[in-house]
Each structure stands twice: as structure tokens, then as C-alpha cells.
Length: 311
Image (cartoon, rainbow, N blue to C red; front, side, top):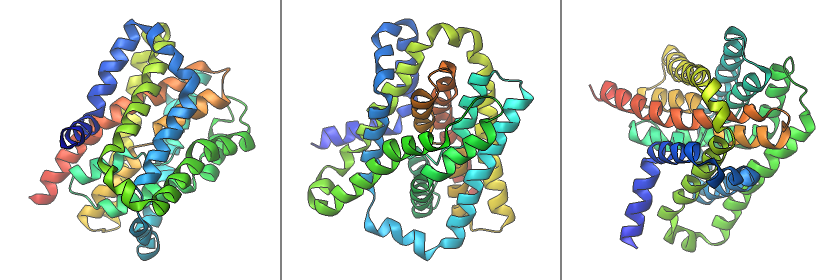
């Protein structure tokens, strides 16, 4: 069991490398992975269920005992990234598909990987977890409304349909995971260290499927999307950190907010694009590339912040 736990920890901490490896394989052997796009919603639901299983009762205490910090993080989460996405889509003159994909990424809640990166950066982990919980639970309202407002000039957005999609693939699996943990805490605690592997496998399969399905199109527009995604992510990390500093928050909180703002649940962006915008197949591409990039940039950011705070 110890060997399995170590393997799970290794895979979870090196998810960016795994994503790159499987994405390359999927690019050259698309038939082996393109089938996964048909199960994107199920894979994401599994990842969100795994997240729910890891949420303890004490995690919710942050929501009620530190409302100011959470409010700052929440506002930054749902303003910096959506508005930056919109500005970049306009500035680079992106096609409707790519603009929609970038905006979808920007309007999603924080990703679970942000909690791990915050821990590595020696940031305020309870605050990071609290922000992820709040932004995820409110995502069924915030994400569809923001996409409707910002992407409406490119494509037609069905607000109600998107809300139901987020409820099904994010809220319900998370709440189910929390309920299962409440009912069987000892059993879940016994396998807690194995749970991140569920999210790792799910995210790797989602992204590999997207790469396999869009292998030919990646050749023509992959570089452009990579540039836009990188700028989007770096702006989120920098503005999240900068605003938190201007508000004179403690350094570990600054780190947590910077990471939480810059790292998105790009798996949700892919799922929403697949479920709600079938006529815009390339809308899944920004989310797939973001999933790779933000794990790499987040790790670099964590190393920089860790050194800065300690010195």
C-alpha cells in the first residue's frame, strides 16, 4: 500500500509531465485517444467527485471565519480572468471558436491543482481550499452568466443550458463526494492519499482526447493559442498577487490568492465547450493547452514565491 501511495503522490505532483507525454502520444496516434471526448463530462464528474471526497468539515470553517480574504479572492477570480480573456480575444482577433474557448477558461472557477501548488509555494492552503470551494459552488451561476455576457458577441449562448451543465458536472459530483465522506469518513480517510489519482487520470484522458480529436487543427493554430493562454495565465497570477499585495494582506495569503486567481478549472471549460458548443469544435483547445501550461507556470510561480517569502 505504501508503494501505491508513493506512486500516487509522484503522479499527482508530476501531472504536467504526464499531460505533455500523453498529449504528444495522442497527437501522433489520435485514434487511440479521440474516443475520450465522448466521455469528457464523465471524466470531469469523476474528478469533481474525487475533490468532494477530500473536503473535510473544517475546510468550510474558512468560509465563515475569514470572509474578507475569501471575498477578495472570489472577486478577483471572477473579474481578472474573465475580463483578461475577453481583452485577449479582441486584441488577437481570435476566431469565434478560439475566442469562446479562451473566455470559457477565464470564466471557470479555480482548479483543484491550485491547492497543491499553494502548498508547494508555502502559501495559505486553508484559504486556497476555501476559495476553490466557494468559486466551485457558485460556478453554476457565475460561469454561465459571465460566458453569456462576454462571449455573446461571438456565439449564441444558452444561459439555462450552461447552468444545468455546470450543476451536473461540477456541483452535484462535489456535493455527492462531500456526502459520501460524511457517511464513511474512516473508510475514505484510509484511501485519501489515493484519491488524487482519480483526478489525474480524468484530466489526462480529457486533454489527450481533445488533442487526439484536434491533431490536424493544432498544427495550424496551436502556437497562437499557446501564446494567448500563456499571457492569460501570467496576467492572472500577476494581477492576483499584485492586488492582494496592494490590499496589504499577509504574504502567505498573497501567494494563495495569486495562485487561485491564475489557475483555472480548465477541465470544466473543455466539458462546457463539448456539451454546449458542438458547432465550435476548436473551443475545447484553449482549455486543453491551459491545463498543461498552468501546471508548469504554477510550479515556477510557487518556487519564486517560496524563495521570496522565506528571504
